[in-house]
Length: 431
Image (cartoon, rainbow, N blue to C red; front, side, top):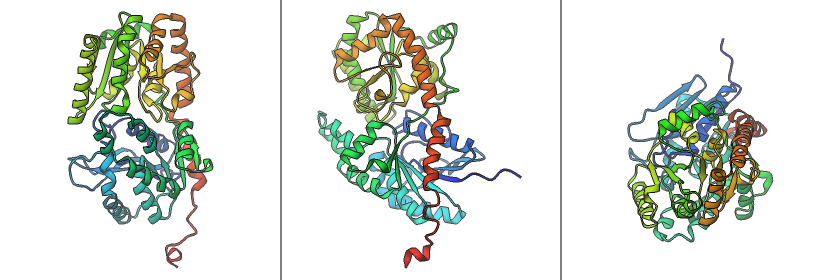
């Protein structure tokens, strides 16, 4: 007979195109989707039964079966069209009702709900309360931080469309309602304590992980082949992510004229994945900015990077850059470091606090273009520093952020709360 699962976990991640093989770069489909799926795979590998619950829309199937212990299960609500994450909470009650009906129809039992991002958190709390099981929430990003960042934005309409006041109020309630909050950086812990007034004992910091078997360095001869195939050079600076204001594509374009004064052959390779009209509008704006700055011919624009090519694109450049205005963690930077590529990190996020400057990575403020350009130039200028970052950065990333270790740490939090509500029967709850 097959072994019984060690437990059953319901993970909720609502926005974007969540799938067994996600289409990264589509609207609202980026690092969080990778995070949830990789964590779920490790839970399943460790012997737990896992359902990743998300929204069904367009022509998506009800279920993707990943393996015997893991499936992506889609619940229809809000119609057939894509809904951006800022508006997802308008439909939360429908999602909760449809989910509970489906769970009871299938007679499913779970030990814990683990929600990701605040839209899933608000619905996950209601589901956990109905099922009388613990709810552990992972924020990924904070409304307060994004609101602070957007205060200086020229486009006030964009800031208003994010509905940040609503989000912050609901985050405040969520953090007090769920059983525990798992933060992805110490900076996030500090901000939730300071701005949302949640005591530290209600939080645990566990960073995101990487697929350490996939994101690896390669021998020099292999690296030469990769660069030839992708038409990239050791003087290229690579950035990958969604086409979003907070990712800082405009900031690194502003740094490029300063960088070229230091490194005349430097070029930006920007993989800004985006399919929506808003994404394309942003990319067109950035291209105009590069033209106005006189550096357009030194910027290579890439669109969506296929999942199977991600590791090679991390390996090929001379430097990987994370120029975000705000980055809760920075998984792309960890993946690049794991591939042996010197990396320059934004100071506006949690990852930079965990690295040793000059050994694992370099850090700078992308809002200061000359400063960021100087850091980008250092690995290109000094071979000894580059070699240190290549070796020590990869060693640090792989040892610190391997997904299996991250999963074990997360399960220890779940186990602490497991069974908390088993003594409370439905009839007692109504008494």
